[in-house]
Length: 330
Ligand code: AQP
Image 1 (cartoon, helix red, strand yellow):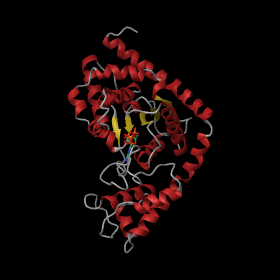
Image 2 (cartoon, rainbow, N blue to C red):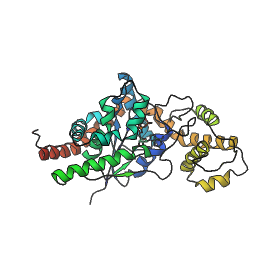
Image 3 (cartoon, rainbow, N blue to C red):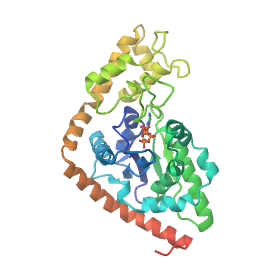
Image 4 (cartoon, protein in one colour):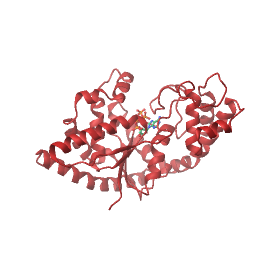
């Protein structure tokens, strides 16, 4: 029996955050030996918000460089741009026709993003989950590693796949979400009730993977806490400190109990400094590799072209089967 298949991706919407790293990329790296992994750069998804065309191109390279710098080996995993494999857009359209408006209007991300971009609530923002279902189902993925915020979309993908299979017979593998137990939802440093996000406009809210050590230390020192002064995990009443504890815990492999003991009798200043130092150390090799890769766009182009070739072979088989089943002449 062959290896199980994984598909996941990150939108080409800006510099990646510590949330993307902990919630998604760390698992991408961990899973690449055991699974047949397809990691795409979701540049078509990025169009749901207005983008500067040059920045969108550059952001695609940044995501690819981040994948490799974080430890994804392009010889083990298939790395490609979503736009290079036209089957994504085609299957996305087909699945639009098998997804209900009621389902799409229940999606939390649609509600959040429509509130953030009230001047541009476009149809793409609404049907984003059908395109994402197409991304996953094209590769007959068994697992989809993501952060907590994407779980709802993977669940909808399962519903769409089951609906299609019931109508036309076994066509799609039904995928499972794969969500880390800790770190699935890293929160903003200034607004710890909202998820840390690439597009956050709140100063010092987000740690970017490309932040310098000085910037990371500064952001940590300014992170919102509470007046209790005790390093104690309580997500409801101490969201700021609990978020920092999760970040520290996932990097050091320590439990919340161990962290509470470690910082017993210490104030928040000592704790924040230690968290900052831990993040800086974790990201040191990333920085070095990322800078090298971004100086070599030709190498990045080779990687995504090679990946797209392999991805297209798999995707075209699935789409051909889908078209035959629904009566579309190719
Ligand atoms: N704060 C987070 N904590 C844990 N996981 C997270 N992810 C994103 N933010 C966090 C996970 O990263 C993967 C890629 O996300 P994406 O860029 O495709 O879309 P997103 O979820 O919309 O991420 P952002 O950073 O919030 O982007 P913008 O600001 O452009 O919308 C996903 O697996 C996601 O769960």
